[in-house]
Length: 308
Image (cartoon, rainbow, N blue to C red):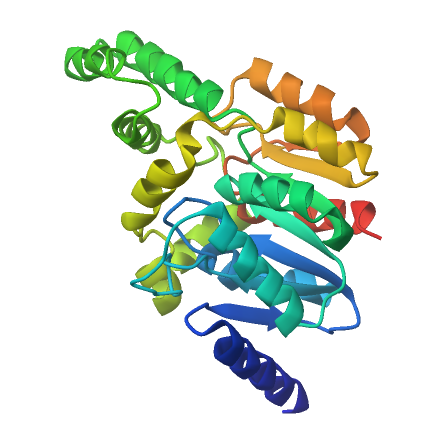
Protein backbone atom coordinates (compact mmCIF):
# COMPACT_ATOMS: atom_id res chain seq x y z
CA UNK A 1 0.00 0.00 0.00
CA UNK A 2 2.84 2.38 0.88
CA UNK A 3 4.62 1.74 -2.43
CA UNK A 4 1.37 2.32 -4.32
CA UNK A 5 0.84 5.63 -2.52
CA UNK A 6 4.38 6.80 -3.32
CA UNK A 7 3.94 5.92 -6.98
CA UNK A 8 0.59 7.75 -7.09
CA UNK A 9 2.18 10.87 -5.59
CA UNK A 10 5.00 10.79 -8.12
CA UNK A 11 2.53 10.43 -10.98
CA UNK A 12 0.41 13.28 -9.64
CA UNK A 13 3.36 15.66 -9.31
CA UNK A 14 4.64 14.73 -12.76
CA UNK A 15 1.20 15.35 -14.25
CA UNK A 16 0.88 18.78 -12.63
CA UNK A 17 4.35 20.03 -13.51
CA UNK A 18 4.46 18.77 -17.06
CA UNK A 19 0.76 19.42 -17.74
CA UNK A 20 -0.09 17.12 -20.65
CA UNK A 21 3.03 14.93 -20.45
CA UNK A 22 2.35 11.31 -19.51
CA UNK A 23 5.01 9.99 -17.12
CA UNK A 24 5.26 6.98 -14.84
CA UNK A 25 7.97 5.81 -12.42
CA UNK A 26 8.84 2.31 -11.21
CA UNK A 27 11.05 1.30 -8.31
CA UNK A 28 13.09 2.97 -5.60
CA UNK A 29 14.09 6.63 -6.26
CA UNK A 30 17.40 5.90 -4.52
CA UNK A 31 18.37 3.35 -7.17
CA UNK A 32 20.15 4.07 -10.47
CA UNK A 33 17.83 6.13 -12.67
CA UNK A 34 16.91 5.12 -16.23
CA UNK A 35 14.69 7.26 -18.45
CA UNK A 36 13.15 5.30 -21.33
CA UNK A 37 12.69 7.20 -24.60
CA UNK A 38 10.30 5.44 -26.96
CA UNK A 39 10.50 5.07 -30.72
CA UNK A 40 8.67 6.77 -33.53
CA UNK A 41 8.17 9.59 -34.06
CA UNK A 42 4.51 8.94 -33.43
CA UNK A 43 4.52 6.01 -31.02
CA UNK A 44 4.61 5.72 -27.22
CA UNK A 45 6.19 3.91 -24.27
CA UNK A 46 3.29 1.50 -23.60
CA UNK A 47 5.08 -1.60 -24.94
CA UNK A 48 8.14 -1.14 -22.73
CA UNK A 49 6.07 0.08 -19.79
CA UNK A 50 3.74 -2.92 -19.72
CA UNK A 51 6.35 -5.61 -20.38
CA UNK A 52 9.69 -4.56 -18.96
CA UNK A 53 9.71 -1.44 -16.76
CA UNK A 54 8.56 -3.10 -13.53
CA UNK A 55 10.88 -6.11 -13.93
CA UNK A 56 13.80 -3.77 -14.62
CA UNK A 57 12.94 -1.84 -11.47
CA UNK A 58 12.90 -5.08 -9.47
CA UNK A 59 16.48 -5.61 -10.62
CA UNK A 60 17.73 -2.47 -8.91
CA UNK A 61 16.82 0.44 -11.18
CA UNK A 62 14.58 3.49 -10.86
CA UNK A 63 12.76 3.43 -14.19
CA UNK A 64 10.91 6.39 -15.64
CA UNK A 65 8.84 6.11 -18.81
CA UNK A 66 7.03 8.86 -20.66
CA UNK A 67 5.31 9.59 -23.96
CA UNK A 68 6.76 12.50 -25.92
CA UNK A 69 4.59 15.57 -26.16
CA UNK A 70 1.93 15.16 -28.82
CA UNK A 71 2.49 11.39 -28.99
CA UNK A 72 0.65 8.50 -27.35
CA UNK A 73 -0.90 9.56 -24.04
CA UNK A 74 0.81 12.98 -23.94
CA UNK A 75 -1.92 14.76 -25.85
CA UNK A 76 -1.28 18.42 -26.65
CA UNK A 77 -2.84 20.19 -29.61
CA UNK A 78 -0.17 22.89 -29.43
CA UNK A 79 2.81 20.53 -29.73
CA UNK A 80 5.60 21.99 -31.87
CA UNK A 81 7.40 18.70 -32.61
CA UNK A 82 10.89 20.14 -32.27
CA UNK A 83 13.94 18.81 -30.47
CA UNK A 84 14.05 21.98 -28.41
CA UNK A 85 10.57 21.27 -27.08
CA UNK A 86 11.50 17.62 -26.48
CA UNK A 87 14.64 18.61 -24.55
CA UNK A 88 12.64 21.07 -22.44
CA UNK A 89 10.29 18.23 -21.51
CA UNK A 90 13.23 16.02 -20.59
CA UNK A 91 14.59 18.80 -18.40
CA UNK A 92 11.17 18.99 -16.71
CA UNK A 93 11.27 15.23 -16.08
CA UNK A 94 14.68 15.58 -14.42
CA UNK A 95 13.25 18.32 -12.21
CA UNK A 96 10.01 16.50 -11.43
CA UNK A 97 11.75 13.33 -10.33
CA UNK A 98 14.61 15.21 -8.66
CA UNK A 99 17.33 13.69 -10.85
CA UNK A 100 20.84 15.09 -11.11
CA UNK A 101 21.98 12.49 -13.63
CA UNK A 102 20.35 9.53 -15.36
CA UNK A 103 20.95 6.88 -17.98
CA UNK A 104 18.95 7.61 -21.12
CA UNK A 105 17.74 4.44 -22.80
CA UNK A 106 16.50 5.29 -26.28
CA UNK A 107 14.57 2.82 -28.40
CA UNK A 108 14.81 3.35 -32.17
CA UNK A 109 14.07 7.07 -32.81
CA UNK A 110 14.24 7.54 -29.05
CA UNK A 111 17.95 6.71 -29.27
CA UNK A 112 18.41 9.61 -31.67
CA UNK A 113 16.65 11.91 -29.20
CA UNK A 114 18.81 10.56 -26.35
CA UNK A 115 22.01 11.18 -28.31
CA UNK A 116 21.06 14.72 -29.28
CA UNK A 117 20.06 15.53 -25.70
CA UNK A 118 23.24 14.00 -24.26
CA UNK A 119 25.38 16.11 -26.59
CA UNK A 120 23.69 19.29 -25.31
CA UNK A 121 23.45 18.28 -21.64
CA UNK A 122 26.41 16.00 -20.88
CA UNK A 123 26.38 16.97 -17.20
CA UNK A 124 22.95 15.31 -16.82
CA UNK A 125 23.96 12.02 -18.39
CA UNK A 126 25.22 8.94 -16.58
CA UNK A 127 25.29 6.89 -19.78
CA UNK A 128 23.33 6.35 -23.01
CA UNK A 129 21.89 3.02 -24.13
CA UNK A 130 20.90 2.83 -27.78
CA UNK A 131 18.31 0.12 -28.41
CA UNK A 132 17.73 -0.70 -32.09
CA UNK A 133 18.69 2.89 -32.95
CA UNK A 134 19.58 3.88 -36.54
CA UNK A 135 22.71 6.03 -36.49
CA UNK A 136 21.95 7.01 -40.08
CA UNK A 137 18.31 7.24 -41.09
CA UNK A 138 19.15 7.16 -44.79
CA UNK A 139 21.19 3.97 -44.41
CA UNK A 140 18.28 2.32 -42.62
CA UNK A 141 15.78 3.39 -45.27
CA UNK A 142 18.07 2.08 -48.01
CA UNK A 143 18.42 -1.23 -46.17
CA UNK A 144 14.64 -1.59 -45.98
CA UNK A 145 14.27 -0.95 -49.72
CA UNK A 146 17.08 -3.33 -50.66
CA UNK A 147 15.89 -6.15 -48.38
CA UNK A 148 12.26 -5.74 -49.43
CA UNK A 149 13.23 -5.81 -53.08
CA UNK A 150 15.14 -9.06 -52.57
CA UNK A 151 12.11 -10.64 -50.91
CA UNK A 152 9.77 -9.58 -53.71
CA UNK A 153 12.19 -10.83 -56.38
CA UNK A 154 12.56 -14.15 -54.59
CA UNK A 155 8.77 -14.49 -54.35
CA UNK A 156 8.23 -13.20 -57.91
CA UNK A 157 5.93 -10.58 -56.42
CA UNK A 158 5.59 -8.28 -59.42
CA UNK A 159 3.04 -6.01 -57.75
CA UNK A 160 5.30 -5.06 -54.85
CA UNK A 161 8.33 -4.92 -57.14
CA UNK A 162 6.54 -2.21 -59.08
CA UNK A 163 5.85 -0.35 -55.84
CA UNK A 164 9.54 -0.56 -54.96
CA UNK A 165 10.54 0.78 -58.38
CA UNK A 166 8.21 3.73 -57.87
CA UNK A 167 9.59 4.23 -54.36
CA UNK A 168 13.15 4.35 -55.68
CA UNK A 169 12.21 7.39 -57.78
CA UNK A 170 10.87 9.41 -54.82
CA UNK A 171 12.94 12.06 -53.06
CA UNK A 172 14.76 10.05 -50.39
CA UNK A 173 14.61 12.89 -47.88
CA UNK A 174 10.82 13.16 -48.12
CA UNK A 175 8.34 11.99 -45.49
CA UNK A 176 6.59 10.00 -48.22
CA UNK A 177 9.75 7.99 -48.89
CA UNK A 178 10.32 7.14 -45.23
CA UNK A 179 6.64 6.32 -44.66
CA UNK A 180 6.52 3.90 -47.59
CA UNK A 181 9.82 2.34 -46.50
CA UNK A 182 8.54 1.64 -42.99
CA UNK A 183 5.32 0.30 -44.46
CA UNK A 184 7.31 -2.28 -46.46
CA UNK A 185 9.34 -3.08 -43.33
CA UNK A 186 6.16 -3.87 -41.40
CA UNK A 187 4.70 -5.84 -44.31
CA UNK A 188 7.83 -8.01 -44.50
CA UNK A 189 8.12 -8.70 -40.78
CA UNK A 190 11.32 -6.74 -40.22
CA UNK A 191 10.25 -5.80 -36.68
CA UNK A 192 9.73 -9.37 -35.43
CA UNK A 193 12.16 -12.22 -34.71
CA UNK A 194 12.15 -15.08 -37.18
CA UNK A 195 12.18 -17.70 -34.42
CA UNK A 196 10.88 -16.05 -31.23
CA UNK A 197 11.49 -17.71 -27.90
CA UNK A 198 8.59 -19.32 -26.06
CA UNK A 199 8.62 -16.53 -23.48
CA UNK A 200 8.61 -13.78 -26.12
CA UNK A 201 5.76 -15.48 -27.98
CA UNK A 202 3.75 -15.60 -24.77
CA UNK A 203 4.44 -11.92 -24.09
CA UNK A 204 3.26 -10.95 -27.57
CA UNK A 205 0.16 -13.14 -27.10
CA UNK A 206 -0.57 -11.33 -23.84
CA UNK A 207 -0.71 -8.03 -25.75
CA UNK A 208 -4.20 -9.01 -26.87
CA UNK A 209 -5.35 -9.23 -23.25
CA UNK A 210 -3.86 -5.93 -22.07
CA UNK A 211 -6.24 -3.00 -22.61
CA UNK A 212 -3.45 -0.39 -22.52
CA UNK A 213 -1.36 -2.26 -25.07
CA UNK A 214 -4.39 -2.88 -27.26
CA UNK A 215 -5.16 0.82 -27.25
CA UNK A 216 -1.66 2.29 -27.56
CA UNK A 217 1.10 -0.20 -28.44
CA UNK A 218 0.45 -0.16 -32.18
CA UNK A 219 -1.22 3.24 -32.27
CA UNK A 220 0.54 5.96 -34.20
CA UNK A 221 0.16 9.73 -33.84
CA UNK A 222 0.51 10.82 -37.46
CA UNK A 223 1.14 14.49 -36.66
CA UNK A 224 4.45 13.58 -35.02
CA UNK A 225 6.43 12.21 -38.00
CA UNK A 226 5.17 15.04 -40.18
CA UNK A 227 6.07 17.61 -37.52
CA UNK A 228 9.57 16.27 -36.86
CA UNK A 229 10.15 16.03 -40.60
CA UNK A 230 9.07 19.62 -41.24
CA UNK A 231 10.98 21.06 -38.28
CA UNK A 232 14.00 18.78 -37.89
CA UNK A 233 14.32 16.84 -41.18
CA UNK A 234 14.62 13.70 -39.10
CA UNK A 235 14.61 11.40 -42.17
CA UNK A 236 18.13 12.61 -43.05
CA UNK A 237 19.65 12.58 -39.56
CA UNK A 238 23.03 10.97 -39.06
CA UNK A 239 24.21 10.93 -35.44
CA UNK A 240 27.57 9.16 -35.77
CA UNK A 241 29.58 12.35 -35.20
CA UNK A 242 27.39 13.19 -32.21
CA UNK A 243 28.14 9.79 -30.70
CA UNK A 244 31.84 10.54 -31.06
CA UNK A 245 31.37 13.95 -29.41
CA UNK A 246 29.60 12.38 -26.44
CA UNK A 247 32.35 9.82 -26.05
CA UNK A 248 34.90 12.65 -25.77
CA UNK A 249 32.92 13.81 -22.72
CA UNK A 250 33.74 10.43 -21.12
CA UNK A 251 30.10 9.39 -21.25
CA UNK A 252 29.61 5.68 -21.91
CA UNK A 253 27.45 4.79 -24.89
CA UNK A 254 26.08 1.26 -25.18
CA UNK A 255 24.16 -0.50 -27.93
CA UNK A 256 21.69 -3.39 -27.92
CA UNK A 257 20.40 -4.76 -31.23
CA UNK A 258 18.57 -7.83 -32.50
CA UNK A 259 19.98 -10.36 -34.96
CA UNK A 260 16.69 -10.39 -36.89
CA UNK A 261 16.10 -6.64 -37.00
CA UNK A 262 15.39 -5.98 -40.68
CA UNK A 263 16.11 -2.26 -40.33
CA UNK A 264 19.85 -2.92 -40.25
CA UNK A 265 22.24 -4.60 -42.65
CA UNK A 266 25.27 -6.53 -41.41
CA UNK A 267 27.44 -3.62 -42.57
CA UNK A 268 25.39 -1.14 -40.51
CA UNK A 269 25.68 -3.32 -37.42
CA UNK A 270 29.44 -3.55 -37.86
CA UNK A 271 29.70 0.23 -38.19
CA UNK A 272 27.70 0.70 -34.99
CA UNK A 273 29.75 -1.88 -33.09
CA UNK A 274 33.02 -0.35 -34.26
CA UNK A 275 31.88 3.13 -33.28
CA UNK A 276 30.52 2.21 -29.86
CA UNK A 277 33.17 -0.38 -29.06
CA UNK A 278 32.92 -4.15 -28.89
CA UNK A 279 32.62 -4.31 -25.08
CA UNK A 280 29.74 -1.80 -25.14
CA UNK A 281 27.75 -3.62 -27.82
CA UNK A 282 25.41 -6.62 -27.71
CA UNK A 283 23.48 -8.33 -30.49
CA UNK A 284 20.90 -10.87 -29.35
CA UNK A 285 19.86 -13.99 -31.25
CA UNK A 286 16.10 -14.58 -31.54
CA UNK A 287 15.53 -10.83 -31.26
CA UNK A 288 14.41 -8.13 -33.66
CA UNK A 289 13.48 -4.49 -33.10
CA UNK A 290 12.20 -4.97 -29.52
CA UNK A 291 15.00 -6.84 -27.73
CA UNK A 292 13.58 -5.85 -24.32
CA UNK A 293 10.66 -8.16 -25.18
CA UNK A 294 12.34 -10.69 -27.48
CA UNK A 295 15.20 -11.45 -25.05
CA UNK A 296 14.07 -9.82 -21.83
CA UNK A 297 16.33 -11.67 -19.39
CA UNK A 298 19.44 -11.12 -21.50
CA UNK A 299 18.42 -7.48 -21.96
CA UNK A 300 18.12 -6.85 -18.21
CA UNK A 301 21.26 -8.84 -17.37
CA UNK A 302 23.18 -6.72 -19.88
CA UNK A 303 21.96 -3.48 -18.32
CA UNK A 304 22.96 -4.73 -14.86
CA UNK A 305 26.41 -5.45 -16.22
CA UNK A 306 26.81 -2.05 -17.90
CA UNK A 307 25.10 0.42 -15.58
CA UNK A 308 26.72 0.63 -12.19
